Every structure is written in structure tokens, then in C-alpha cells.
Image (spheres, one colour):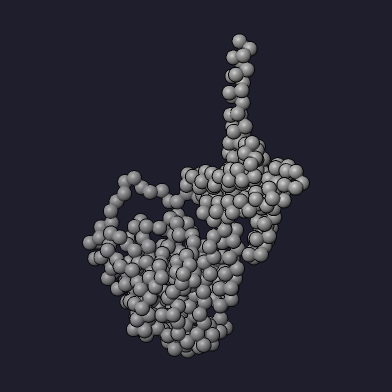
Length: 429
């Protein structure tokens, strides 16, 4: 009987450290989730995709520990090392998110973020080396091996399996009783919808610097673009009095006839209508928001069969419209690729990303994209000069992307030699 019990104990005991290690991993996820809730506030939910990414990240880290310990021939430390490392990570997660919430200025520069990250890695490496407890002659070799393997593993884990989206805010619910858009009625309504907006467009006042505006949301299945059209129009009215001289185009499955469609025909007409009314002393403010690729801006309404806008097509539309001095803001991935086509001496062109970079924040149910929020909601709402607002927005975008460890979008600006005087007149008014 005693022999049987002894065998049973020996059989079960190896599993206990593994279970403790697994519990430490789970605790690190809970700490990350709790920290994100504390940073972003109530109203969100656990992301199943975020859980999958957290599992993948933890698996990569454990694999790195296995490789490192195998190289220094200390596999006996695996369970203990996993346990203590993930407990330390749980504490660091809470501390770093608290730091982000209480002292966000530390995350506003790449140097600040790198310093915080390196200090975090240094603490973790110190723990791993201490656990090895190698003899003095072997300490340097063992510590160096573990440090190199660990840093390589962490780089892979952070770059490809970031767990910043464990806690997310729910997108607008997808209705189970999905109703297809009546495409015939949609197209039949376009002349009326455009006509109503054009008729309501206030004329230019001679001798006065007026601002005409166009706000366009190009993708129908994510409400953020429609919301940005309305939010930006309100801000342009508040800052420049453009409300009565604003045209709005938007593709929206949920509200297909609230505004004219954002297709190429309506865009060309809207630009011409503004060009016909804009005086030499006036300014046009054009805002386009959607998805994008290099030299391509999405005008996506799948059921309506719309086609995307290319950079050369947009340049031709602008040239044909007769539009004079203009501020043109293109908010989309790869939007910087439009600059070489549409830049001109009398234009200020601002884009959400460099030509080879993506921008962020396009999701159903959101109020703003990341660039839209930074440029319009935070910067332009307080600073009416779009040149100054751009630099404020870049700092805000950079801070958010560094905190989320995203590839920088690198917003762009191109100021023509003649647009400054026009902007100064608008701002003086």
C-alpha cells in the first residue's frame, strides 16, 4: 500500500509545477485585461481575437525559454522560470498601463517608449539570469545566451502578437434581419439628393473670404466614415462658417439615402458645383475619408457597384472643376501617394499616412478614425490654422501608435507656395 501511494505521488508531482506555470500565464492575461479596462474605461468587452493573440504570444515566449534553457542545459528550471516570469509580467503590465494613464507624456516620443520598454526587458532578463544561478565561470555565457534568446523572442511576440486588444469596444451590432439595399431606388434618388444639396448651397459673397467645403465618406459597411463626414462638417462650420456652403457625400448601407452616394460621378459634380461658386479670394476645404491603397481611394458600395478613385482621376477632377485655393485632407491608408498628383501652388494637401504606410482606426461603430480624431477633433477644433493643427495631430498620432506599438503611419503635408496668403485671409476673418 505504501509503495502504491509513493508511486502515485511521484506520478502526480511533475504535473503540479506545470499547472502553477499555467496559472501564472492566465494571471498575466487577467492583469493585462484589468489594466486595459482601467486605461480605457467601462463599456468594452473581452475580445476573442485578443485572447487568441495572447495565447500565441505566451506560446512564443515559452518556446523561447525552452530554447534558451536547452542551450544552457537547464531544462529543469522551465516550470519555475515560466511561473516567475509571467508573474513578473503581470506586475509590469499593471505598472506600465498605470504609467501610460497617469503620465502619457512619457510615451509621446520614440525615445521615451524605447526607454520604458528596455527597462522592462532588463528587469525580466535579470530575473531569468538570477534563476539560472550558474557558477561564476558559467554565469556570463549562460546569462548572455538567455538574454539574446529572450530578447529575440520578445521582439517576435511584440511585433506579431501584441495583446493590446484584449479589451475592445463593441462594433455596431450586425442585424440578423439584414435588408439588402434597393439599388434601383438608390440610383433613382441621386439626382434629387444632389439637387437638394446644390440648391441649398449658399453663394459666394463678393469681397468676402468664404469657405466652401466638401466632406466625403467612401466605404459603406463601416459607419465611422459617415460619422466623420458629419463631425468634420460641423467642425468646419464652427471654425470657418462653412455650414451653408458644404456638400456631403457618403456611402452607407445603414443610411443609403441620407446623402448622395460617394461615387465618382457625384464627386466630380460636387467639385464642379464648388468651383463654379468659389471666388478668387475664397477657400475650398475638401475632406475625403475611407480605406485606400497606393494611388487608390476606396469608393466602396458593393451592392451599388461603385468603383474606386485613382490619384490621376482625382487630379483630373480637380483640374476640370475650376476649384481655386484649397485645403485637401485625404484620410486613408497609403493616402500620401496622392500628393504627387494633386499638390499645387494654391493647395495645402494633408494625408493621414505616407504613401507606403497604413493608417488606423477604421471600424464600425467608432466616432473617429485615429487620424480624424487627432487632426479634426483634437487639433483643428482648437487651432483653426490647418498648418499648425497638422503638427499637433502628428504628435498625437505618434503618441498613440508608439503606445500601441504600431508601425508609424507618418502623416504628410504639402504646402503650396500660394496657399499661405489665402489661409491667412481666412484666419484673419
